[in-house]
Amino acid sequence: MRSDLVFGALSQVSNRYQLCQLASKATRKLHKPNTRLQDTANEVLARFHSTNPGSPSPVSAAEAHQMETRRAA
Image 1: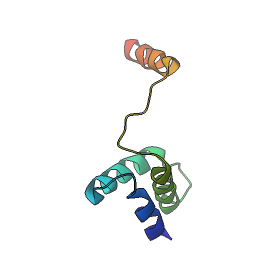
Image 2: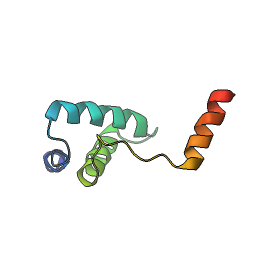
Image 3: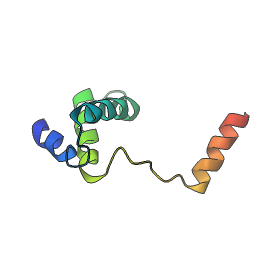
Image 4: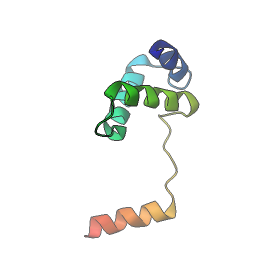
């Protein structure tokens, strides 16, 4: 049930408003065409249960180089 996913995600994010904001942004970015939006939202909440969505993720050197080449083009 989604309420279990929400309570699990609240273990990483203490503020419910911030959780809603982060979940909506992540759902928009991770959503794939021809899939249900509800399934994507559930997947995002499941990911938030295991990791802290507010902490910055480390950027690898390959990703940093790719970002630089995109900006230069």
